Image 1 (tube, rainbow, N blue to C red):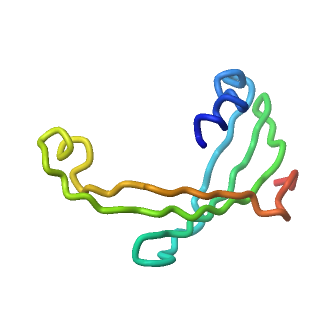
Image 2 (cartoon, rainbow, N blue to C red):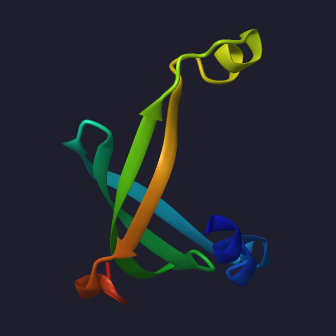
Length: 97
């Protein structure tokens, strides 16, 4: 899913011309294994603000105790995201800062 998105929205093509700042506005536990995350993205083209978008996502997580030294070094807490769904809030498309 993320690979498909990156292929159709090549982030490297915009380096030096476009940028996005992200501000996390909330993280709320939705269940024992999921979180609802909300954030705001401010977009810039050539340094000038071009719009603000609000987004939300649901992240599903799983805990897996590291059983090897390599896994312990890479992820000592054993927290993995095993599901991701995100969408833009409809009232934010093209909103000016």
